[in-house]
Image 1: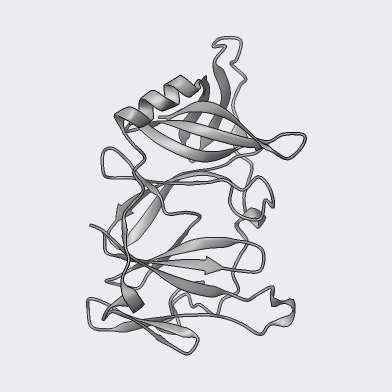
Image 2: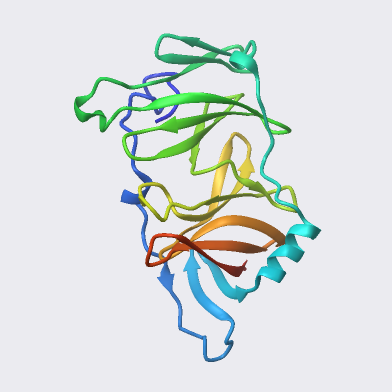
Length: 241
């Protein structure tokens, strides 16, 4: 799923890939809960040591008061303005170079398992990206398309902007159907790319809401389903180094 520019580019005609099909469980490091009673999980992810500690509702409320939730701002544009046009099944995107790329819906396949529908959401404020919401057979995601090159990157959500302004945190929960990515992933905008720093596919709970407390520390409102499938909330302090 992406933008069609040339025969060598990733195109929107490629069947969408369910993110849960490619999620690899993280490597679990030694259980150190006996050393720190608040430590709940410890993982090694792409050379990064990530730890999740127990936190409290008061911890989360204090973090939210100090640094309110800051997702990347999306400027809505009616019809896409002058740079995004819709013709038939395709969105035609005019790059800053004057060239165009196409992001096209896919429909009519048996049972709809390879169908893809893209809705234009808007343009990021302060970053050169168009945002599209993708809808597929059993899940959804967001496509971030660079306005200079047309390169598309798939994220599960509109990410949170780090306090240092240099990183984006993709945080998404799917504890019911479990068809979409459930976890956290950190990205750094570099050139026309969103470079993944680490990805944590979480099992047993999901990040309902996030508050940054440092450049490499967040507090998470974690959700899991109780015996009656009603949401149950706990809290985590997550650090990485």
